[in-house]
Image (cartoon, rainbow, N blue to C red; front, top):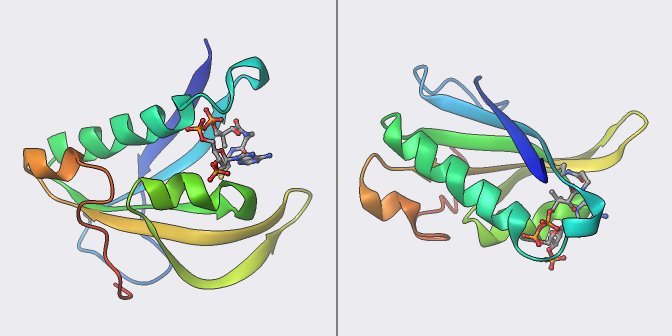
Length: 115
Ligand SMILES: CC(C)(COP(=O)(O)OP(=O)(O)OC[C@H]1O[C@@H](n2cnc3c(N)ncnc32)[C@H](O)[C@@H]1OP(=O)(O)O)[C@@H](O)C(=O)NCCC(=O)NCCS
């Protein structure tokens, strides 16, 4: 295995979404395979999976160092940077995902405002 992530139904910290919210966590790529686009491909696969589930809000607590990865996947920051004990600074990143094929395009329909 060279990469993994977990997707669970979970409400984001910025409010109720009527049960149409999905949280991405634990995204990791084996050290020897990093910086080759695998993390981005994993994120794309999860965006497509959420679209296949009917769409909704996709969000995560992103490490500050990984912010660019999520931004390239069309995700926007929400709220303030916060400290995760033992891990470091994080920020909430999120995007809307439609139920149609257009939602698969990266950076296609990010929500620039708060939800
Ligand atoms: C984050 C991670 C999954 C990216 O996987 P990847 O296959 O290297 O990703 P890509 O090649 O598609 O993109 C590289 C991106 O990784 C991110 N990244 C680079 N170094 C990083 C680090 N030390 N920690 C976290 N993210 C990092 C950056 O966003 C980088 O994009 P940039 O060019 O804008 O800086 C991988 O670095 C990893 O497993 N890190 C350790 C676990 C982790 O930090 N998970 C994320 C939790 S939010």
